Length: 77
Image (cartoon, rainbow, N blue to C red; front, side):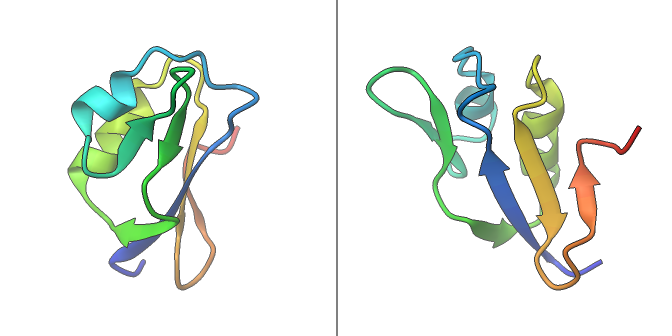
């Protein structure tokens, strides 16, 4: 696993709770309607980013290894 992650928010699923932006404001922000999006498509992997994804009640945040494309979150069923 590389130190860089691709991060995306499925805006069709986002429930607008703001938990991700509150827990990782450097990586996530809310638009004028309260929907989240990643500030950058690729970011340094960190516990903060993973915790934000894990805190999303609808698993709208997807994280993958930027180098290999390996999915890191959400966990595969």
